[in-house]
Length: 617
Image 1 (cartoon, rainbow, N blue to C red):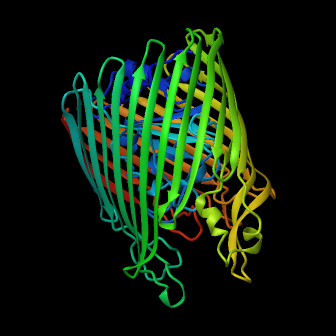
Image 2 (spheres, rainbow, N blue to C red):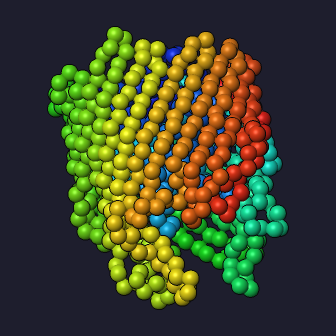
Image 3 (cartoon, rainbow, N blue to C red):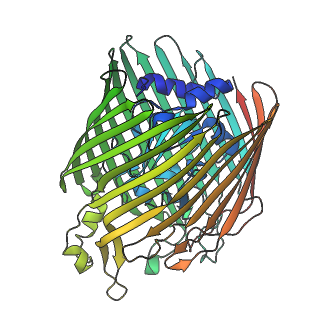
């Protein structure tokens, strides 16, 4: 299999989507075929046998959404729910699985929150600004990242190749929303740097359907992201990533009895730090890294603190790949992780190691076989694995690829789930039966057709099962509650249809449709999982004008056993390049002001126009 060094591949990928200049079409095509997300080493996309989606900086800017989750929900097999507007609790479900089974990394930094009910990223606070590229690994194939990675979203910040470059932008729109974004970066022979910041705020709308007051639930987000690199020698390089996110929001319905009110606020702070050393030899590359995440979340009822959680995650990783010869490669690594809810003095360690063999066994037949070992403080030793293969036929100047993958995994109960059941008022069945880990397995079969004009068509069938999933239960008579094992198998299976069509004369179309049967152990449809998801996008470019439209269709979803109404949302956007430095852009989200719900008790945004300016140097 053809590999590129990890550092080189990321540099090329980021350069391809630099905010400073539009790449040549031929360069963009060749570089975009390099992906890292499947096995954590750079691979040509045509050789990857797992399901990978790519979102470029051009895609993000064309759609214009402020929050990254809004961008990602236009991708195949992804659904999203939020309990209100900007900054609210947001779940991004890949192929119908829970949001906490998806791992999100930004420049190698895991942004998961260990203090939550489950360990998951707080995507409601993740802004879309200053991102150059997102790679999405769909399905339970995250062997190299951890046995509980049921899907992986790999985010890369922007990068400049000049000694000094940057940009600033300002946007305003409905709900008195403003978004100020800026970055600066550069590169010399040995040193590279990138510093980015964003400040978003909105008055929001009334999130709860049962709130008669009509008060607005506003939100403010300030994010700073820094990446520094130093090339010590031809073989040795150093890297530092630091990120800080501060979010403040308003919500309804907090407190109980006499203290119940709609005067509720939340504060969120996350600080991420990652340092790494990369060493390259003639046929191998080795990376050692240390990362730490600090989380603090606090809720206020009428300006009085009502809830406080602090947590931290530390992770030490070793990642390497060695080319045995032109067609055989080993990818291997080890990691040590400590999760902690420091405000409750709860801790847990996990140690893991993995190895994956990659080969082009015969011409155009690519295979991988990997094994992972984990040792968890509370739930013991586990071995998981993944196998995949892809075969490519050349048909004139086109290519046809048949691929398949199978993987297993497990998820240990979170610190919160375990300790919640230890309360004196916990449900007896939860308190008396210790939780055990969830077991997962899944496979996919896909066929892809790539034309000489770079149009792409893809059909994928997937089937994923979770054994003994953990679920929350409440007794309405005794008011006791807790987390119990849902004995049996829950399942998510379906079909993905994907098309990216280059029509010529500045036109292109991208479309995806997902049919997803997500059922619990009793065979009932799982809540908030639409059976039918479709996106149809059109893009047009003429000289200095770029136009984008996307319609999203959601059908056959239920919440708490009650069907939700089907809906269609149309978003449009346009950008005009005044000169090489200055551009003007506008968009309208939910153009026809559709009224819809993804969660039964919560409102969603109405028609929302926005206007902005961007200057780059």
